[in-house]
Length: 292
Image (cartoon, rainbow, N blue to C red):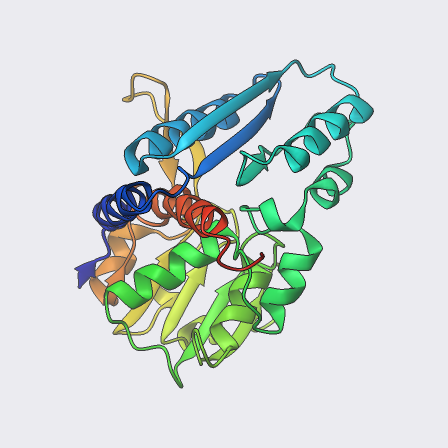
């Protein structure tokens, strides 16, 4: 069993990005600029945005954080999005989700200029990704693809089973893993209503768990030699920790790991790659790689 170290891989990629930024600046180019909008004081969102700002520093990017209270109106937020769309210095930006209930997340996502949508959530980016055109691929699926590639894990012709059908992970992951230029795999998507879920998992060469249910995948669901990618990050109470909780994946790690050829831990697996891929998308936005 080999542990897939997302933290170390992300650090390597951020160093590569920083090197490229220095070369861009030396050639007289512009420093990539990522902006983020944060609404309210959600603990998880605060942490994510703080980590994104730190990642920008590590990569040599300029970063801007715009904070608003959770009573901001939808109209006012859409106005702020439009200002970033029109700001020529901002290469890419994100609106941290979730948003307060009175604001339509879909409306906000669709208001973002798709050429600056480094989260890859805009319908134009999602559509381009689905048919294999150049675009910003959302960060978690891109992070998983990158880990598979960097660890030289064969995917072509393999049976890939994805647990979960969310718009953020499950659906895009399925699209990418079946595309010839990325996974080139035979893909099955399972979810809470799948009648043969266990049988499907047992047939998987690559199992990607993104179902949001702590320790859902047990040893009797995984065959010997499988590659397991655990996307789950659920906070579960833990009295032994100072903050009173620990992060728990969708995979029962201790019993599943011995059966695997490769497995990602939680934390330290897919998580660090997600922010790192946002940096990669921002670099592409700064270089106008996909959209002129």
